[in-house]
Amino acid sequence: MKRNTFDKIVTFVGFGLAVFLLIGAGLLNWGATFASGTVASQLKAQEITIPIDNGDPNADAATVAFFKENGKSVMSTGKQAQMYADHYIGFHLSGMPKYSSATGLARAAAGALAMDPTNPDLQAALDKANATVESVFKGESLRGMLLNAYAFGTIGEIAAIAAKVTFGGAVVMFLFVIAGIRNIRRTPLDATI
Image (tube, rainbow, N blue to C red):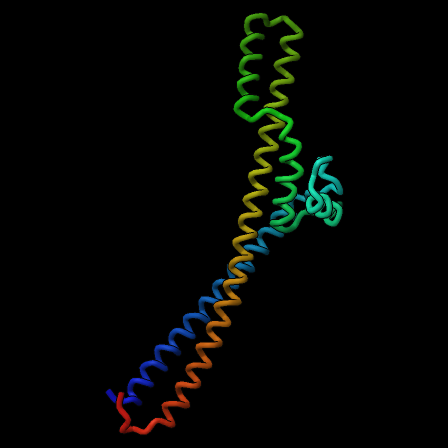
């Protein structure tokens, strides 16, 4: 095989790979921009204000610093959603029963009230149990949704890093293509591999 033909094939394949990487970088950047923009707009629309203190006296220094730095600001990033979900909602839910336990207690209270429907103490116990179920359900639901926003935001951050790396790979491949074209011009036509 002639060296010139081989160099042209390798250079053409390199050009194709460079274009592929460039397109990949663009798509990854689009995904990253979409993810971060969607997370920010959806979180801002909820207008959740981060407190200055999460209420946990045993919180580590990083958690305390996060709430001091972000306190009184409206949640807009995946990291803020994660910290709020895990260290504010999670802390406050840690003192409550799990949803399955809370619903079991509410069913037991409803059964007891059914046996004695006029007993005000049993009615109060049912009301308290139902309020606990509602609080746990809302807290766990919000926590789950915020952690989904965190996951989506993290995927966007990973896509942004991948876009930069892929773009760098495209630039390197284009440099190799330029070097290949220069090599093709310098290689004698009768050279073989």
